[in-house]
Length: 225
Image (cartoon, rainbow, N blue to C red):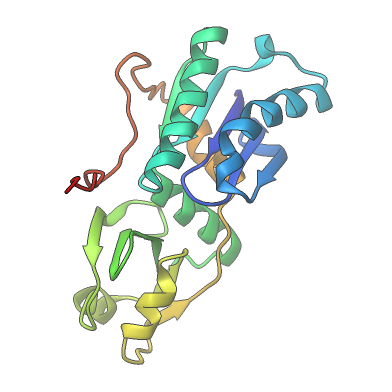
């Protein structure tokens, strides 16, 4: 079992959570995206001090690795990699969408349904995936432009929970469907806990030198006139 530091800055809400043996001990949350770079290391320091621990006690650092905000992901991954370099600890990369599915499943405990996290990717596009109750991908993570018949095949098969900051615009497009259920969800690094513990046991570590966030699509740089 392990003591793992979990970091998430993929969206507007950023957080750091300390977990031992697959159970979250303490979590600190920052709701202002522009402050993520300044607050993450401070939160790490505070969490360790509050638990009477030092960097030597930490077994690994996990990061919510995307998709999500381009800038936010860079902050989180840079913070996690910096800590791993300084502390000589392994890095664990967790899909942001799978982390969200884990969080919602832990609340709803519905083993018969599928889980569809959605992150706003501007206009009618979302970053999304569909997971079964075992967190296996039924639909692989992707950037998807929504239309009224999106997920029609999946909804014909199974009840699906839709959640995340991209789900409201999908709810507006979707005709009423008995298998579509919309739920509120707030990002939290503590939702990474079961996944990062599992990856640690499996020694599924990211390459510290070469790992970069899962952006899912290229960042857009406007052309100068």
